[in-house]
Image (cartoon, rainbow, N blue to C red; front, side, top):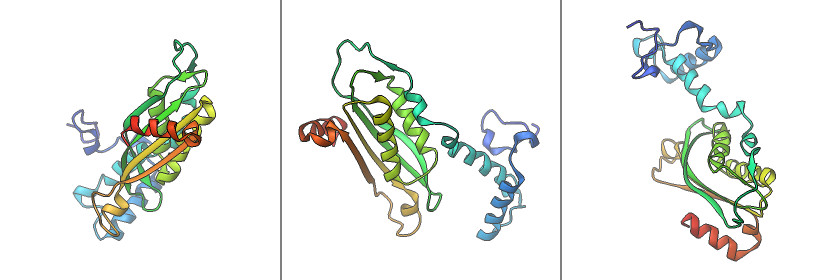
Length: 206
């Protein structure tokens, strides 16, 4: 097989075509990092790594090219009188820590109490992924998701809880695996009313 052709079984382990649009400056930056780490970027196993890394980061950071709020632009008012909590939980996501560029891997629970409209449930996950695919800190990610839903759906309440592990802590520094960080943001009735807050957290499993 031509080494420049994508492999349908594992396209990431073959070289990109020259026309793939990967800037040379980005590839050279990766080569510099490899040299600084103590290896040779020209050896066989690392020769195509700069292009692979660039391709990977184009995917990791594609949230910068979208406005997550656009996913909430189409709403529905005919819900048969439904006026209870809408919840999507155990939404997996991946992000990268802005301090060390290390992976953040976790799950989120997103809930809102509708006002006069609802949104397709998959759109909540799309909002999360739109913000997660950027360099992040978990606290800001939690706030961005909640604030966007609050602003664009204008519900009676919003609740977002995120749990994640951070490779900047598990793989370096204190090197403490198995630690989960939890952040939450409550807005509207979920913040003001203790009973509503307990109800939504119970539905989330907390």
